[in-house]
Image (tube, rainbow, N blue to C red; front, side, top):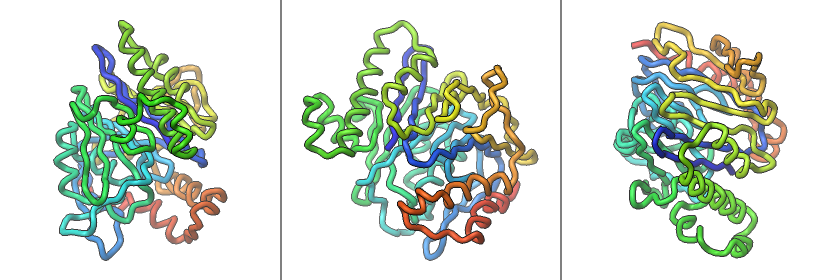
Length: 336
């Protein structure tokens, strides 16, 4: 499931996100600039390679380099929600990234929405772990929703993006039906009905807030609470102007603030990791990160792939060797 939205008015430039999923592990990572990376892609696909230009903070339930979303030091935000109708491009001459590492690639290499749209044409998504669509927003207030339908990239921007909200339905379909009577949602099935319900909630919340002289972080979280589901694991508010990420989790309802500018993203320095479910508030509302290590990353990777509910739902069998490989994968990056 999940819901994402963007609101930009005056001093306000916020992206909000509720992550709705049956697994509650979630971590935040710092990602250094100046690293040569190769995508986590297996043969026969050709993996994409790039150098990280911008440091960034990412949020992940799977492990480092597989983010659910994040913000870089230029104020670019990339987020995603599930879209089961997504169909990625067929194999061609372009190098490949996975659906989640696509987010990391964009945060590493792009500063604006325009740059993301250019970069998206140079790589293709392969070996996807899910089916997603993406919301990208930048510090200038530009924004776009990107979907992959029937193997082609569809971009909604400017006039084709009248409502900057993304739930779990095709964007054009949500725009076409958003003003229809709510009773008609039931005819589409529980999944689509719930998606449209959250889309309409977010659409109305944005419309209402535009009538106010100012919008606070507390207002943004109030809106996210209106869009919550019983399985909402964490909620995020990205403040693009102030370069901050505010979050609450299912175990930590008190808002915690992380500033993108508080970190040194030099390649020569170690990264950092935060277990967002075990954050120590200490009355300051500031998170206290630990130094990143492969062992700490393995806790995130192992927690996800060994979760009994996820294992039963997806039917996967992940060996300890594969978990070690995923956990240590970021250690292979070379400093430039």
